[in-house]
Every structure is written in structure tokens, then in C-alpha cells.
Image (cartoon, rainbow, N blue to C red; front, top):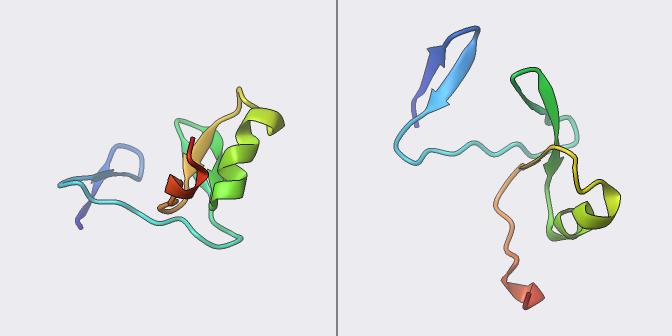
Length: 69
């Protein structure tokens, strides 16, 4: 994976690269907007009842095939 600075200390990912944002202190923002990081299936399922209009980003891979929906 290669990170190339772009603009105001931002980064671009190339070639299907990914970043894992795990841990209690992980944060993600884009264009000045802070996103809630989703770390597990329970948090992903809670979006609809917590704040469906909020900003969310996946913090890592989540296997959701066990839900059946």
C-alpha cells in the first residue's frame, strides 16, 4: 500500500488499498466532518436506531453473512 500526500496533509489510496481504523482511540474525518467508526456487526446493526442520518465509516472488515439479512 502506498500513501501519497494530496492537498492539505491528506492522503490517497491506490490499487484497492485499505486502512484499518481499530481501537478505542481511532478517528476518521473527511472534509472537516467527523465520522463514527463502526467496528463490529452489533454497531452496524444499531445505526438504524441510533442515528440513521449520521456519518459512519467502517473501521475494519465486518463479516455480516451470519445475519441472514
